[in-house]
Length: 441
Image 1 (spheres, one colour):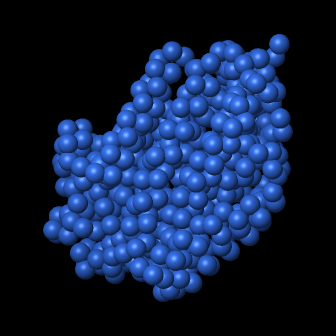
Image 2 (cartoon, one colour):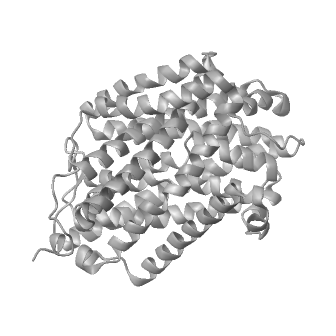
Image 3 (cartoon, helix red, strand yellow):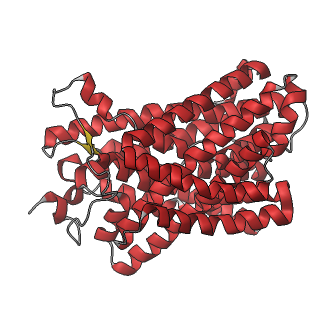
């Protein structure tokens, strides 16, 4: 019996993202640099989710309120992300399924439907954060009112469709270019802020206060929820399969090695950006006694007087807009993978996009019109906490699948990796239970 079907209730069905499935050729020269380069790309699409506007809100709030102390949380959640994303690549390459298809093929229908609903909620929460972030970016740079900015964000649908028609490499090229712009913007701002580098280094060391101080824990979990995101696990397991790697075990092993290197390097880049936001907030706001900054607009307005240069807020706005655009591209792809994988429903990508975007725009527009800036800041942090609570429902199946020899064959995760992954899965679940208790209390 084929190991791809032996441990599953159902044989593998249709491929995910069929229009780009195995569309990127891998050089036939064994072990060559060109083979490695063919796998370069998906990790950066995943990394985008680790620095979306929701991350900005939680990192700004954390840095302004607690200085550099929460850098350790950014580092820890990044290590968790690296482990979990490597498991996504492993699942895809070993079983030929993305996480959504794996859940559908492994669980009874009612369980799969519940997991599908939770995944959709996570994508809507992600999308709300993207809508708000992009609208704030448009407002900061071009002065477009937030209410109009929220509606303008619906137009990015057409950009994504155009790029997908050109080929998946174009989507990756756009993402990587915008990431480069974000990195340059932050490099300049950090240089202007001139943080205390000794304190920065100390900030990466763990402290017990994070668990004992409820305010700190709430923000720490927000950072965790904004970093390791449910939709990213579905996304990575789908887009790894855009590469036309071979079907033999050695070819799959090599594909797994290169895909893991790709996502690990990309996530280290994401850590740099996330840490930069936190360091910028700590060096400018916390240092000047402004400890209550969680609004992106407010942060933008204060950067010029605090850093003494008019260019600082513009760079902040440009980086935020790039993050918003990037995140919408990846959320669209994740939404497509989730819907096709769980339900076998193949909607045209533009229709799928307009549906999720419509669901996200209504609460985002409502809150923006009703409560203005302060409401959007609260909504941003709330979406991140919702994502944190959804996370276990994607992480537990992922760890269970990749540790099962019947499902994964020879590419089952080694014992040490499975052990680390279970520790991460349980830690996330325990932290979320504590967050819920604190939230209710």
